Image (cartoon, rainbow, N blue to C red; front, side, top):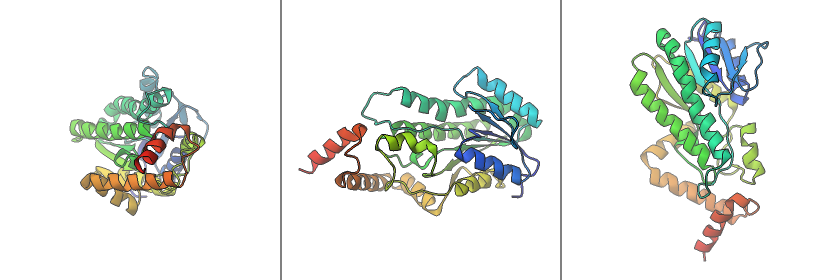
Length: 274
């Protein structure tokens, strides 16, 4: 893809589903790429430095090492993320804390560490959020909250540094990935609620954001995603009704009967139908 040759790129979560495909696409387009991940691999085609992004003391040094290896920085892709079930009616636990730490605070501290290099290069930051940032689903409150907070952080960052650094947010829907394993194991599969899309489409959207003449504010990954983003922003009450109808259909079909975390919601729906 034009516009990527020779650009120096740092990708967080580089050994995850999106990260691996993204690094391959970037290097294939001629970019110089380094990664940060909890699981390092410095000898692969893309050097991935080990870093716990939830450790405030570790991130600045890891980012500095990656920037030094690249000789500067033109693009940061905040891709690292975790998921998991978290009903809004229950008190926050370790699952909630970790999603906020990885999905929001890790992206915040990584961006802060990378900004001097990005500003010097008049570079860009791309945040990988989620459709759930604007179209939330029940029983996954921590994920939706953390991804919506990422969007709010990107908006504030754009106002502060947008004269020198482009800031974009990409909104994938559901991609087949281990990030959904714990949710499925809890009996809360997103099947029938969120439509699967190919990882290649997510990668293509990130590359579009990175190479556009001007950094786009928000980037959907599919035509359906563009419609959902518009619906959530301009007709939120209608979007809520569509989600409620879909969830009610799943409950009526008994899809959540075996999920203890959904017991309260299932009970209330069935009481309401009497």
